[in-house]
Structures are given as structure tokens and as C-alpha cells.
Length: 252
Image (cartoon, rainbow, N blue to C red; front, top):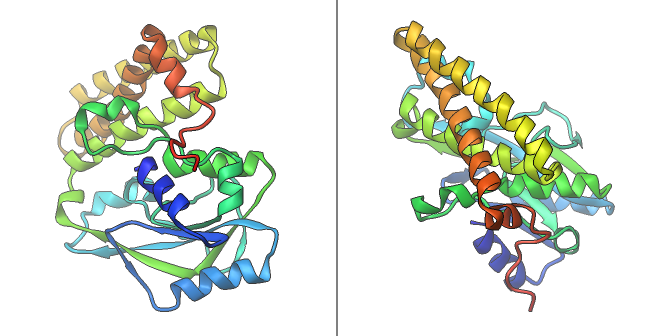
């Protein structure tokens, strides 16, 4: 996904580049709202919009017990305001100034079409958002820029949430290792992560029904974290990959 986004960045000629995903429905006025924010705030480097659900089946009651980010949903209130990582900016509804994006090194790796490459995923647009904030750039949230995220029945299952949590665990490990790439810190983090995995695993054995399924989602998250940490620790090439300054391939 990051390669596709970078291809779009280099193909575009505008100062501002807006991003969507292929599973969103764009509300009327979305593009005008994005443009208005940049027009009225010349210092803004990025804009995050509201992402509301378009349910294609009735959501189960347990959905509300998980963070909206599991379904890439975002609602930070009725007012335009500055935001700072990790408050919320999703690639399905965002716009960034091209020069700011390139200045901080672009997107980090995100999802891959080949499942065998899952351990090479990173923190995607969240990594870009974090870098922009660390560089002192202004990011604004505007609720007038609205998209509806289509949520099919296949995403309303514990099986999907377990897969989603596993990938998020890999992404969070990627973020943490980039922040503190030393071997001693990695070993200390691994100890804590494995304790959390064992705790979630034992807890799931003691539960039944929905309670057990929810703990299995937590267990999947820690499996992703632990698996990624082990691979980075044992494979020098993985550590070099995770700590690359930039993942932009095309510099033309």
C-alpha cells in the first residue's frame, strides 16, 4: 500500500494530495471541505476528516467494546481543531501537502497483497502522521470532510477482529522499535509482551462465549507484537528494514 501511495504522490502535480480507500463512500462537499481547510490555514500540513460507518449488516452489540480504529472509524467532535499523534488520522480520509510529506520521508509500510509479507508491514499513515507532528507541522481535523466506511458482514466477526488485532500488533511493534531500536530495549519490551501474551492466553482458557472471544482478540494482538519482535531480534535484515529512514522507492 505504501508503494501505491508514493506512486500517487509522484504522479500528482498539486501542492495538496488527498487520499481515500476503495471501500469508502464520499459525502457531498468532501473535497470542497478539504480544500477550504488548506485555503484558510496556510500553515496546515495535513487534514484529517470524519469517518462514519456504512453498515452493510446489523453490527453486534460487542462491537462497542472495541476501539473504533479497528474499523477505521473516526469522530473527534463537531469542530475543526488541531490534532496531535496519536489522536487520529486514517488513510481512508486524509490530505497532506506534498512538500511536507516528502520532507519527512513519506509513508511507512502498510498492508501487502501477499499474506506471506505480513511481517514486513509497518504503521502506514500513522507513521507519516507521527513524523509530521514530530517535525512541528500543523495537522487539523475537520468534521465537514466526511466519508462513510463500508463495513461488510465479514468485518463484523471475531475472526476478522482477531486478524485485525494481529496486524495491529505488528504495526505497534514496528512503531516502538523505530522509536527505540536498541537491543536492550527490544529485549525488555519482548519480556513484557510475552507476559501479556501468556496472560491473555491463560485468561481465554478460563472464559466461555463472547468473553473468551474478546480475550482471543487481545491474544492475537500480542501474538503479532511478540512475533514481530522476535523476527527483528533474530534477523539483522529485519532490523535494518524497520529502521530505514525512508521507504520511498521512486525519487524521480
